[in-house]
Length: 407
Image 1: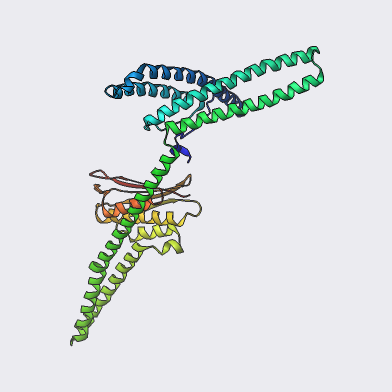
Image 2 (image 1 turned 135 degrees about the vertical axis):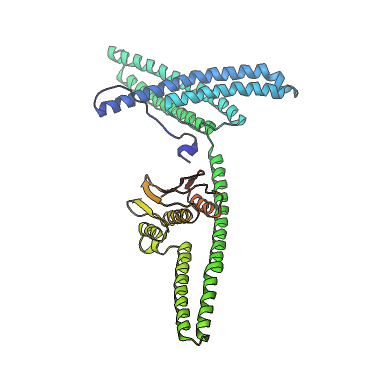
């Protein structure tokens, strides 16, 4: 898991504001300042770990009798957790300031996470301080070694042996310090944001909900198609059959011609409605002409003027094209039939691997997001890990925006 869902949503390298010079100089200064802040953060972390562990232990000892007695246990535990959360708040601020970490603002760690973080952070912080102390002692010994070599008090064999041993110890110390710093970062991500297990469970829940919503949307679409066929096409076919029957049984040639003319017009209306239902099931123009031409067909069939702006370079994934088409088709149809709109604008934009589809009409508003059509669109968009936003206040205008990731 990565990105904002893993807890740290951004990482910033602090720069030096107000500095004038070349871009390369500013980058070097920014990196230098970043490393200086990180080193200061590690050193401060050793101090806060020791102070936090000491305060936590003293509080535990002071509250121990109250924690053992059942009647005072809840209150004592509340006092203990209040202090523990203040300590973790300081650690969180340290990570944010010195390392540029960003954590979810509204995420609150459970008590178990807080106590575990303080226990592990205290021990690793003290160990980190020990390693830094050993590196400092090693630096002093290295200086004495260099001084002895310059003064000639050390033989070459002894100098080589001590240099080799010191290099190995330096390597081990630096690797240990690096591992402790990485452990500190991982502990902060797991404690101040959702863990990988929580993210996985959240993802499973989202997939289960979206799958159920897709099934419901498919069933609702099937019922709507059945109603369109039964109430529309079937009734027109019955009327067509009656007209042809009257024309066949009629004895007046002029009346028969009139009935045949009505039957011909009725057959054209049936074909148009059948074509509309077929396009509602799946637009064949997507396969043959692409999304832009398919949206042009939606604009041509709409009863109100539709202005389309299509800004997409390159091909799109087929599921994304299909979802975008149905978003535009459904919202434009709703605007023409129910909102009283006189103009509709459609904008399709691909930016940073996210396809944004925005449909706006000047109707009277009041669209119901829980309606069959819009809820079906939401389910279709959610199935692609997208987002559907509906803004339709009373009096209008109505704006429907779908964001579809193209990955």
